[in-house]
Image: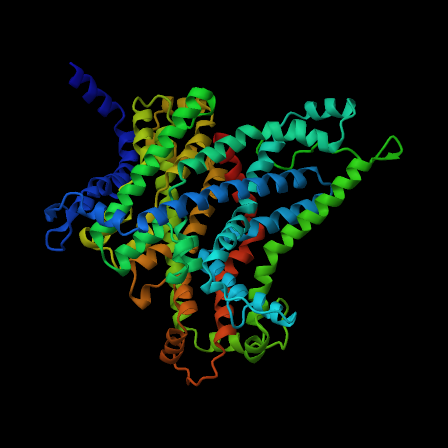
Length: 306
Length: 311
């Protein structure tokens, strides 16, 4: 009887099901099949055997990953960079959005918003090239300026300690316009009556921003931060790879899980270990996003992601 | 729904009741100065690239990359356009991949989104979860890479540049939420007239979804145009290199650049202005985006705003 009902529904929704079929096939093939491929992390991969025919080797790949000492470095770097990105980027985006919203002059506002959004449209390859122009030792603009001022040039590409600052700045630069647009939309959605009431009560503009605009931005901020915290163990491969490349001197302060996995796979061809690192990242990421969502759900159901 | 950032805000006039408001003035000073600084920081790097591409090579070597063209020279562009074969190939690959990926991606995204937006479809939540779960958990790079290379044999085929980016759960969600706002009565009346589900999607929903299609289409096009990652993983054949990956290769490899120029027929001496040439290549690879930017920017703003409303 239940089967009968099911077949009836299939027949009834056959067109809709057919319309879904390509996307279902796509995600089955490119997302769910690779999930099954996680078994590689527990195998000694050989090309003849492939994913499912290779011999098991237990936790050897994981042991190798953790004993190499890289596991801690790349995990720490990934999390710390993402925390810094979340803090700095959101702060600057809210700052720019409030200024853009409050400042008069439609022309100035439009032009500024367009310019701030520009870096979002550029590929990371181009960003890497620009950074190289600015930072390289021989003919970089920064060092040309330093030399012009009679100061010692700095060898940025050989000094790991500069890189956290550089990467945070680059991330802020690339995402400023994108986030500003989102926060601007949130500010535009605030009920104008609140501002009018504040105006009548004699609040000055700073009080208005602190007491009305900012509190009204919290829901947007919380959602954006939550989404970002859920991805705290995912490094932005495009950024790190194009900014740092294969410059091993900088890895202590710039290597993230994603670049490590990529290098282990493509450069050193260590399939088992890079698969293990990838599984470690996925599981960590999944646990993070589930806990964040659980915490938010307890605190305020409406703000949970799912 | 407030989607426009253009709504009038309650900004008070600088002069209120005949008296200058000091807090407004102070705020305006802070605002204009900070925003101008931020805008300069965002635009100067582009100026650096353009200026460097237009500057005499020897000047770059001595004085570093300039923010304004000093010792103006078109030599780099001259060389680039004299031996354009490799760059032209990369351009053609990128245009082809972008066109194919955007059109196919848009078709699949909208069709999937429409099916999920149908409130009478019994299993819509099940399917939504099926898609959404892939954003929470993944098998990681390695199984995905091995699948595409060893099992699907897409390495060094155009498919490897198009297929992996075709569908994106976030775009499906944005499109679905847009389509959910289309009044159901439209679908109902079409059904009564005997139209099938696919016909409703193709003839009714697609025309009504033009704003969302424009937005998602541009996001897809930008992603394909700027993609170098799939090429990094899956392409070693020079004839299949898209623009950004070709640029990546050339930037990191002057010898490669000389070779490319030589294979295109250039008489190679050490006089190839490699630094300004790199920058000229960057300009040529980025140019179309910068030219289209003023016209398409608002669609991206629209897309982000839909996304922001839905979380």
